[in-house]
Image (tube, rainbow, N blue to C red; front, side, top):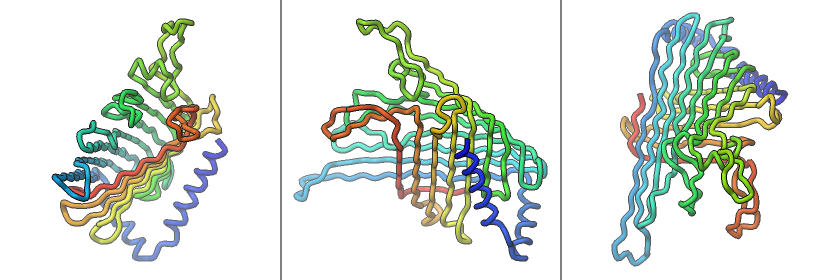
Length: 321
């Protein structure tokens, strides 16, 4: 909890520095903006990036390949003087195939958030939040594609939180929730038996026969902090930025081990229908055990929590709205 309190303090200080001492022109602009953003505001980005390479009798060598990456990031926010309702959906899927090899997944996520708040003071709201995360297709421990390490709704996360939301403007928010319920679902018997994603694993007898299958559900109670910053740059809004930081501490089990999920999407608009996107995601969850090969000999020596990082860069069709 000490770490969460420090992070809350830093977030509030940064926000105060960013939005303090406005000029007279800025004050007028803010007044106009506040008076005109009541009601629905919708927007987002849809992207589809494709690449292909083909070689026939190519002296320099090469291997045929095809790849596709898609991204969807949309929001629909409703604002009135005394309350708001923010909704955000981020989804992505990508794959690559080289030569006659199997199709390998490169990106796969569904992330939906809905937050409702009622005004408590100038920039503070009493708020409730719902967040759901999962994926669409199985994932494997490549290059070994016979070992499934995830699949649809395995895992899936449902988070319900009550707290206070700090919204000094339409770009920044810091949601602080001392009451939070995090539910983990592993809707696959094989993965549940292995104790994947922190659920209780199966119990076996001495001959290896399952006595009790692993749990497919796990519930945690703790504190939660979510910081979101979203903006565009330049008059033509040719660069967009969305970054989300989620922090969770389990009050009952190892509260000092904070779960981290930090996602960033940067969009560069080339013209109306073509752009480039960079997406990154950093994850740390003490309950997710990653296979560790200490000496690089291809043999798994142990399992333990590790920092997970993903980066996807795409150039292709994109539409901002």
